[in-house]
Length: 267
Image (cartoon, rainbow, N blue to C red; front, side, top):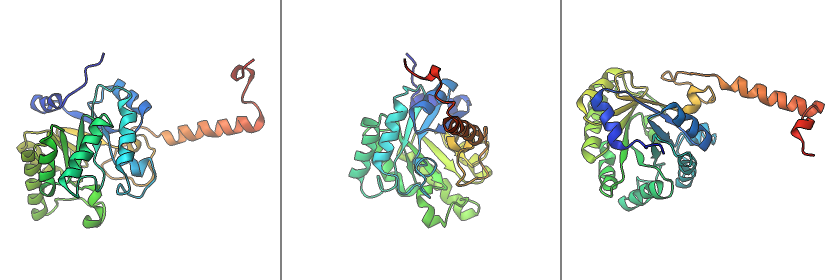
């Protein structure tokens, strides 16, 4: 039986100078492939709302959505550490709701940890959730659930005031008990400074090469998301034409009657 990674393993990777690999995942077959490849962390991101469900942003995603997709990933019994996003309004209203919803992602979904967007403004929430022994990954910088306040998906921390605020956010989430923090959409030099100062691992997405690890959306690296093309994404494959060719061939064979053959039929 595979030995699953723990938060202690992830924290030790920072101490040992080993880079941490993380990808989003929303389903059972993809989770199996990722885990066979040796991914360190799997994130069931609320990005599922954009790349999987077709919403314009992550705000419509519900707890039920997140639990459903987390269960699907966990059924693959991954060795990777499984982290589930807490969707919009699942933790912002009050501490009881935050604890209950975090607990649902662990108990009902099967995740090992949850991820929460925000810095100093959610430090008390992180403290409340970690106080009941639920591990938390923090997320600062460009936080997609805050897109309306930010005026869209904009790089954060380019001026001195923003940079100091992000440094304060990083310190706050670490002090509150987060075991790792995602740094999204911030200048590489600032991410390097935060990474050097914190004792917990930093996971970058659009935050340069100095972070302790990196995370990307699986649909982005496979060339399956056309809604946006952020600068920080690297496409490692272009699967859309491969899939389109398979579907086109199927349609053609059905139309011309060459599928199914005798070999595809029962006697």
